[in-house]
Image 1 (tube, rainbow, N blue to C red):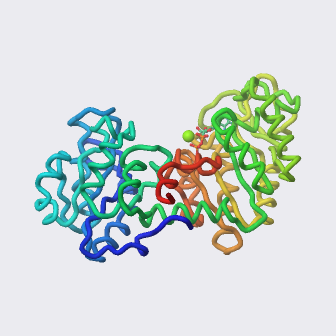
Image 2 (image 1 turned 180 degrees about the vertical axis):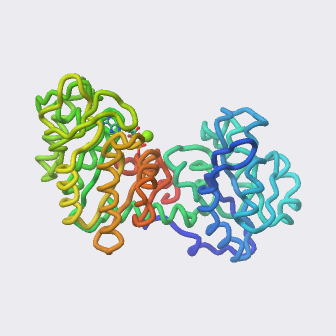
Image 3 (image 1 turned 90 degrees about the horizontal axis):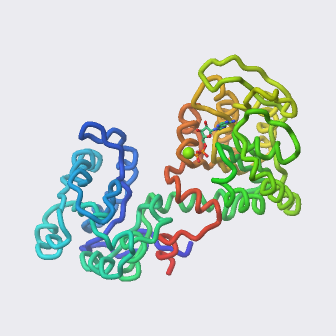
Length: 394
Ligand code: ADP
Ligand code: MG
C-alpha cells in the first residue's frame, strides 16, 4: 500500500483533522440510521487512545456553499456522543476554531460545522484547504465514500499536512484491493440493475479483469436484444445494443466469459404477486416484461460461483423490490453467503440497491465486505483514480 495508516503516524499530543462521512438520514430531528456514525468509531477511539485529539470534519446534505441552518451538523451530535461514549463539541465556525483553540483543546472530540457551508469546499479552494490544515498537525481521511470527489476537505488539505487513512478507509481499500486489485482467481462479477448506460465504465473495466461476468437485471435485456432476441415490453435500452455488442467482443478477446440469463421470469404488470411465468430467455411474449432471471439461470450463476475464489457484486439480478421478482437475487445471494461462510469465496459487494437487496436476502452479514460507499465504490470498480485516495499517496 502506498498510503499510510494511523499506525504509521506519531499521534501523541497531536491534533488530528479527521474527514468523516456522517451524512446520515434524519427523520423528525433525529438520526434514523446510525450505520455511518458507527463505522467511524474505531478511528476516533484509536486517535483518543494514542493521546491525540480528533477534530472531525464532515459535510451534511447539500447546502451548496451557503449557511443553511436546517443542514447544521448539530442534529448528529447526540448520536455521535452515544456511539463514541464521549462528549462532542460542535464548533460553529472556522473563525471560532481558529481564534479560540483552547476551547477546542479542552473538548475531547471536536466536530466542525458542515464544511459544505463554505463555497471553497466543493471548489477545492486552496485557501480553505490551508485553513483546515492550520487547525491540526495531522490529516486523517476516513471518508472513503467521499473520496471520489476532489474537495478541500477530501483532497486539498492532504497536500498541507502529513496524511493517513483512517480505519474505515483502510478496510475499504484493503477489501477492494482483495476483490479487484490483486484477487485470488478465478474472479466472478455479478453486474445487474436497471440500465447498461449507468454501468458502461464498470462493464468495460471488469471484462478486462474478471474471469466470469454475470449480467442480470434490466441490463441483461439489452444484451439479449443485442443478440437479436425480442424482449417484448421489458426495460431495454435499444440504443445501447451496439455498445453491448462491443462489450461482448472485448470480453471474448480478454478471455472473460459473459453469463446471460437462459431463462427468465415474465409478467404483464410490475406489481407484487402479479401473474408470472418462467420462459426461455429467447421467448419473451411481445406484451410481457422480463422482471427476473429464471431457475436455470440461477443454477448457472451458482455453478460459476462454486468455481470462483473471488466475487464482486453490484446490482440485483431482477426487480428485487417486488416479490416474487426477488427470487433469483435472493437465491444467488444465499449461495454466495454460504460459500463465503465456508471460506471458499471472498465476496465484496457495493451499491445502494445492492446493499438493500443483500440485506433483504439475509446474506449481507456473511459477505466478506459490504461497501456502503455507493459512488466511490463504483468509480474504484470502474478503474478510476479516486482523488481522495491519490492525495494520501502523494
Ligand atoms: P445499485 O444501486 O446497487 O447500483 P441499480 O440502481 O443499478 O443498483 O439497480 C437497481 C434497480 O434495478 C432496482 O430498482 C431494480 O428494480 C431494477 N431492476 C433490476 N432488474 C430489473 C428488470 N428486469 N426490469 C426492470 N428493473 C429492474
Ligand atoms: Mg441504485
